[in-house]
Structure formats: structure tokens, C-alpha cells
Length: 278
Image (tube, rainbow, N blue to C red; front, side, top):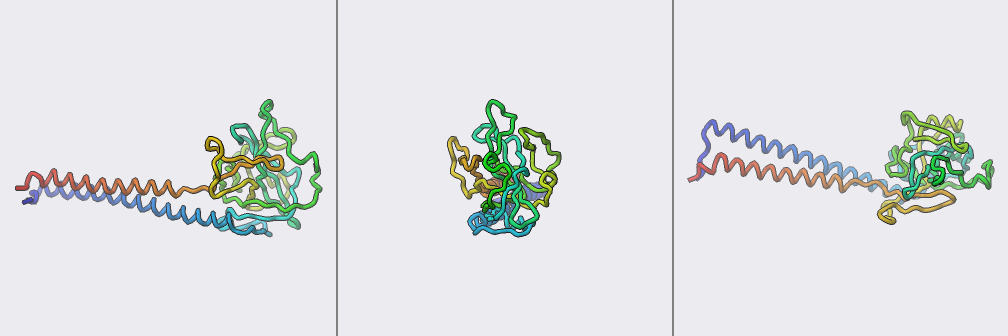
């Protein structure tokens, strides 16, 4: 039979049990936290998928609820302002240097503009630092054509895809700017600078004409597919989803909890009970 350990050994036994169970409780709670994060990310992903699949909206005001309207399709009638555009530097299309075009779109009858990510333009391999020409300006350089209907996607507070990164409204810190071929080239997007460039109030949201998909099909060597449209290159961006990562972390913490309990039980039996059995 097993005999209980004597008083000095009993204190060591209690400490060993408390330490092992305490560590197991910590890892179990970490697993619970990661499981909760996975549920939150799953709920967010479900809302984003529903937003992408919902009918387009037509915002009339320059301010919208970004938390509830992110990834909604938007339909606006109006026109692009020709000179109100900037190129965002350090972009790539299939490993080729490019710039991202952000142009002001003025809805019909509105006194504000909406920044629109129109896509990417490839730079000349022979002149990689020179800004490429803007498509369509040779046809309508003054931008006095008929109003058009803009179909785009409303970006969240911070666009998380590789090609749409940086297009968040608010202070972005110091933005490096320079002129090339008559176009202002920026290192990042800044709403205050954009408002000064346009001379009109700027909406609190950004639209993109590049595709945002629930699951982007992989192109060659796992790269996202690129589509040429009206002179721009559009890179398919997959909707961000991090549920699997949190579930993996949760599994690791739960596994560690089981391992700690088993090791604690084995240690207690070996050190305090095995030698006292008869």
C-alpha cells in the first residue's frame, strides 16, 4: 500500500503539486484566450465575407461608419479630378517596380472628394525611378468627360493586403514626397497632404478598384493573379483571415497543459510514493 510522506516531504509534495497545477492552469487559460481570439476572428471574417457579398451602397456623406461598412461595395456617380492624384512608391507587380495610383473622385453634387486606389502602373525598366504616364490623359487631359459610375470596395481602417497597405486615413508620420513627370510621388498616404493637394474636404474612407476576394486563386508560383484593366494593373488581394493561426496556438497551449499535468503526476508518484509502497 502507499504510505503518505512525512511532514518535511509533505511540504515538498504540496509545493510540487501546486507548482505543476498552477503552470497547467496558466497554459490552459492561454489556450482559452487563443480559442476566444479564434472565435472573434471567425466572426470578423464572416462579417467581412457578408459585406463583400452584399449589395452596393451609395454614401451621400463624406463620413461613414468604417467598423460596420468595411469591405462593402460602393457605387458612386461622379468624375475623377485629373490633377488630384498621387503615386505611392515602392510597389511591385510580379517583381517589377511599380507605383500605386490614388486619385480624388468627386461624387455628383458633392463638395468633398473620395480617395480611390485605381491600381498600379509599371515603371520603365530603363528608367525605374521615373513616374509612368497616367492612362487616359492623352484622350481627355482636362477630365471634362461625362460623369461615370464608380464601382469600388470600401477599405477598412487599415488595408491589410500586400498591395493595399498604407491606405489608412489619419496621420502617417513623415511622408517623403518628390515630383516626377509632373506627378507627386509619395512614400505613403497622408489624408492632410491629400486634402491640401485637392483643395476640398476628404472623406474618412478610401475606395479601391482592385479586387478584394474571399479567397484569391493562386497564380504562377503562388503569386496573386494580376489583371490589366484600362491601363492599370490590378492585383487580387485575399480577404485577411487568421483563424487557423489562433486555433493552432490554442492546440499548442492545451497540449502543454496535458503534458504538465502528466509530468506533475509522474514526478509526485516517483519522488513521494513509489519508495513507500509495500
